Structures are given as C-alpha cells and as structure tokens.
Image 1 (cartoon, rainbow over the protein chains, first blue to last red):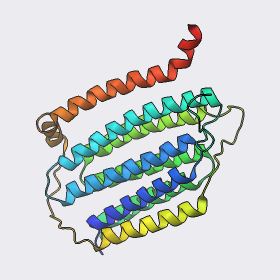
Image 2 (image 1 turned 120 degrees about the vertical axis):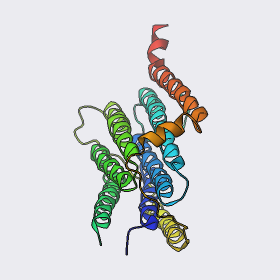
Image 3 (image 1 turned 30 degrees about the vertical axis):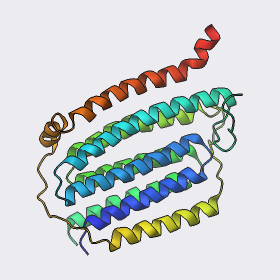
Image 4 (image 1 turned 45 degrees about the horizontal axis):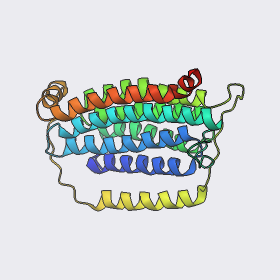
Length: 102
Length: 169
C-alpha cells in the first residue's frame, strides 16, 4: 500500500492522542507543556499534509508557520508562569496547586 | 514499496516511538530528550510533504528554542541536588482507556473518509511562494503575530521577574 494522505493523518492522530494522554496523566507542569507541544505538532502535520495533497496552494504551510510562532509564544509565557508557581509553592505539581495565592 | 514509503515509515516510527517515550518515561530529562527525537522526526515528515522551509523552521524554533526553554523549565523547577528528576502520574488507567478510544475514533475517521486528493507536483522550493504569500494574503496575521511575539516577550519577562521587584520595593 502506497503512502498517501491517510498515513500522515494517522501519524498525526497518534501524536494527538499521546499528547492528550501526557497532559492527563502527568503531574509536573513542564510535562503538561510537552504534551501541548505534541498536540500542536499533530495539528501542524495535518495542515501540511492537506496543503500537499489538497489543491489549496501554500496556505496550509503558512498556517503551520503561524502555529509554530504561537507555540513559541505560548511556551515562553507558560514557563514564566511555571517558574513563578515554583517560587511561590516550591513545586509544580498541577494536582497539588489549587490556590491562586499562598 | 519505494524509497518514499521506506523513508516515511522510518520517520513515522521515530516520531511515534519517541513521542510514546515522552509521555511514558518517569524521568523528565529523558522525556525532554525524547521530545528532541520526536521534533526531528516531524521535521523529516515535513520534508517528505514538500515543506522544506517549514522543516528548517521546525528544527530552529522547536529544537533550538522551545526545547531549550523546556529544559530550562525542568532544571529550574527541581532541586539541583536530586539526581533523578521524576514526575508522578495520576489516573493512568482511565487516561489510557480514554485516549485509546479517542485514537480508535480518530483512526476510523481518518481511514474511512474518502479524502479527495490531488497528486500535485511538489515544487522544488517553497521559500519564494511562502515569502510572497506572507506579505500579500496573510500580511495582517503576519504583522499581528509580530506584535504578539513582542507582547509575549515583555509579558514573560515581567511575570518571571515579578517577585524580585516586589522585594525591592
């Protein structure tokens, strides 16, 4: 069976599911961020695959580029928040932090 | 099975296996390094899809930027003296069942849907086309993203420094 659009979509679906699994099961906030990165990459693979096998020109690749930029901004802000949480509570386990301040 | 298929399966296996390690290993540093392999695998998939510029951007921004940031996050939020940096896990079984069902649904939808595909020729390079489309059709989003990156930079710096300035006052 020749590799076609479906194969790329299935790789993306597996990555998305693994990202969801990582977000749900991990306690450490940095690990949750890694799960989010996996999900964003899965979305990106879908965009690029449809741009390649569809008839839309380069629009899909431009959107994928924008998603990469948004992921960079998101990671910077989220890690700043995580560092602040660590300063306040001395741990970053998302199941133990249930207050907005000390 | 031609070269394209073999290379695709190679990159797909690298991507999926290392992504699996990212979400299952208990050592956070191992997770971060597995994420490196995942991002490289995805970059290879971009090359196979004819997105050469995007593959380079993926390596530069994700591996050179976001992954280093995540590693900084790991190092700064754990005791330096503790050698093994481990993370706890919760709800393992419900999460596995739930994401298994989700994967089944997604897999079925992706496989059964009759995607209308066009076998277009891959252009030798996409840089010219991307540059042109970025400053014509998508110029508003492009400029807004530049503004967003500036705001994110200032915001991240001010959030991370907040405690120190309060102490000074």
